[in-house]
Image (cartoon, rainbow, N blue to C red; front, side):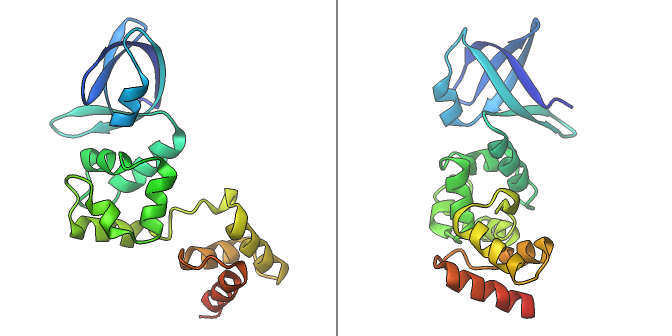
Length: 185
């Protein structure tokens, strides 16, 4: 399985690029924002999702690990294939897409071609509490986790409680109260 590729771009089309690596050309499907960054004969490094199906073997390229990780989370949702996952990522940065999912923003997700209300609801339902990387949480999330640990809860209990805190709640003290309610239920 291919995890990343580094090489020279031979060709750029509206949906993909041809990357030459050690004399072999790989056709890699990438998001439009990624395509805009590169020109032919430029050096390029991409993280790769190797998607193998019965009738096809496709490579999807991403400039960062966070994009790749989010893409893989998106296509794990039933009904979301690689093309729809890539289209959702075209909304903006990985953080922008995560925020839209975490806040339950149906209108943003349904603005993507190929994403209807049912798919958008399914993505939100399945991924809403999973996209916060609590190991590297910062700001209010980190403060809430630290407060729960200081109150005697384990790190895993604090992380689990944080996953169920509403993203609309912005005040740290209210987030701590909500997390404590989650722990007591």
